Length: 98
Image (cartoon, one colour):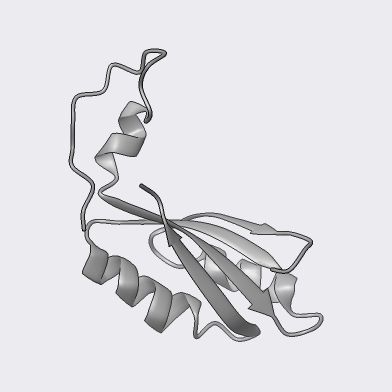
């Protein structure tokens, strides 16, 4: 389901900035990596079209990345065929931004 584009004044009451409204579908992807592979996987993921941010983190997940896409199908394609298949990635959880 695509986010509806609405005028955004960017004021105090706004939930999203203007640049966020332009992005039709956004997601946070939480990734687990093989031991010792998080940095290498993050570098590869950073090069994928649609990935806006990548961070190696501590905790139950090893990598967090922010993705954007024009529609749900292309977002799914990016996550399933590119991010999840990155060498070193062992598991993922995709959270859509609402």
